[in-house]
Image 1: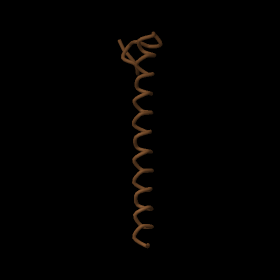
Image 2 (image 1 turned 120 degrees about the vertical axis):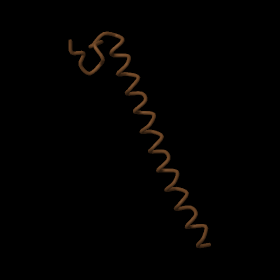
Image 3 (image 1 turned 90 degrees about the vertical axis):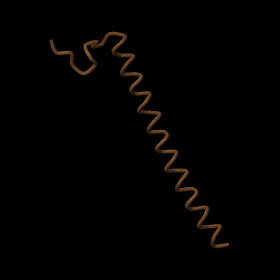
Image 4 (image 1 turned 180 degrees about the horizontal axis):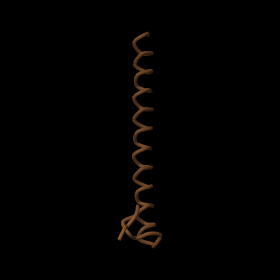
Length: 53
């Protein structure tokens, strides 16, 4: 018996909750990556301006 993408739960509440949790984890990782890139870029630009003074 083939279970498919959600481990056999299909569109049951448990399968939908699993997809919701995976989406939330993906959102947290993407937000962290964006904030880390933004923070590193900001520090790089501010340090360059401070060196010029």
